[in-house]
Length: 382
Image (cartoon, rainbow, N blue to C red; front, side, top):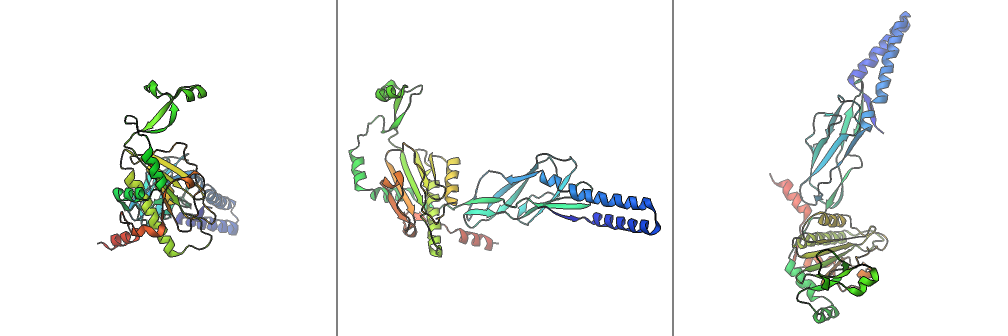
């Protein structure tokens, strides 16, 4: 529902119409009564049509990037009119002191980009401060206003702690199951091809020696063996929030937030190597699986966004379906709460290292960041 109220000119307009009506009734002058009725009708038309430009107005956050907890950032907010009523209609914008780049007015049909300097402390969805647009179309007698930010939220991803890759690898490799270590030791490693990864359709440039003839005959098309480079490093991270039927104690919340900062740190540091493969499986109400082969980009952003929304639910979490072919020599780390049940499906059968949320603070290869302390220091700085 859009709010409306009369402008100062509209109040004077109504007073003049009321005066003419009273004068026409007292003196019995029909033209004055007709004029007063015309003025009242014009005011009512302004009340009816004032909201038309606002209903055609579109607004939303541009998908340039996400905010990071504990770090200053910008939210870019774009406002435009998809179907302008007239080229000379003006919208008067006003917002809180947090908004930057607010124009005095905006012409319909011309997009306007506004900026919000945000300093989020916690991950998750952040409500945007109010941003009001107003217009007195078409006669300037009645003003209609609308809050463009109603229902608009920006996603804040968890801050990334500092992870020492060498220390993390030693932590994972020392704790792998004995059966997995024996399997790796007994594996045949072809010197020229690397680890066998799977089968795929033949592509131009593939050697005929890689064709698997029995599978090709079954599928009716050439299928070649796909091998993995010997130096490739592969890591799979399982984020398990578990279930929470009752209230969440404050200390357990803090431990879970620290674990998510560890997961974000692993994502950021691991994808900086071009020869590294990273998989991230997030359990919960909306289970998701992401994977990326080195380099930051949309895959890294999708992983961080999934971590930003990862919280325990009253019911046991659901696990995503992993891809059919996972890399060889896969190191698997499960980050979980103490009460989290065992993963279901294929993830539950993997050889992995489980790390409880309460143990993250004692890891020698992880340095946590306190987002709230960082914000307090920045606010206290002159």
